[in-house]
Image (cartoon, rainbow, N blue to C red; front, side, top):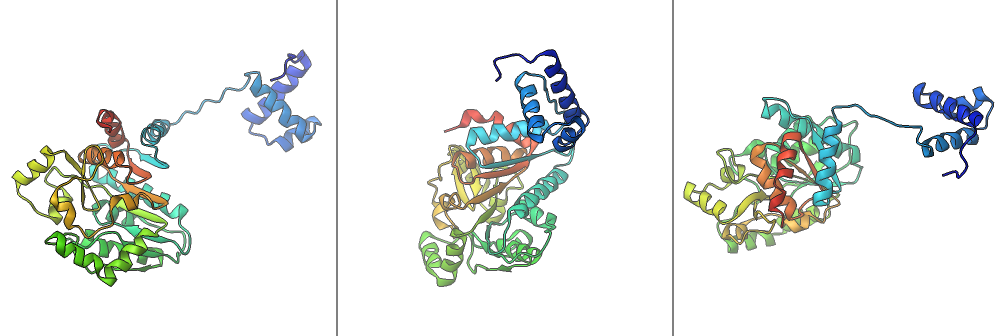
Length: 323
């Protein structure tokens, strides 16, 4: 900052330049020409005005509340990226569509030819894919991160990989194995199959991961649709600390993988390996996803989150859980 205060004429000139630039929106080159100054002189006067506290910028937008939520989530869980969209009052379905649209835009803005995209199954990612409107065709490869689930065609990972590849103009690899094996031994055999290994290896090398976060409570829990268990077993899982499902894995509230035997039967990429993918985007929305999101973020299994403002606020209120 200058140690000598400007004289009245200098103050007048600074004020004139600031008014032309900030109030009238005139470019510095135009101001320089009008006032007979060099472009460098105009730039210095604007800088001097800022240093003197003569410029106060006020932004009025309802979106600022969303940016505050994004910053809070990024700071708390050390995310690389966070997008929070407005909630649609009275409609969880419409809110989910807005979340899917925002995730689709964020994803395609960063997509490049030659990229590999790893994907999970689920309703949320189905909504993301429905929202896709890519600006052009992309030479990309889409690969599953988990085995498939019979009877859930429209949210099954193979169907979603195929649809995503079709919309983007790329190709899809499919996995010919179930998400839930009957035993750990069967799972180990399936994971050693050449066709399964190739899919998992491709997923590990992906530039992007797109993954949903599942709830383990409530009638609409996709985990129990894929792997039905009794109500008593559900209560037992929750009572033991399980709060989230991530790529089929049961996650405790502190982010650790549950030691439940069900996790040993999964044909899926381990959550820790998803965290190594450069842009790992989790997409989730709704009050029932608050506990699952917190648990998965405590585990640091992804670096980017897309959600809605109501869910974001509830997630931040759950900070007392943090490991």
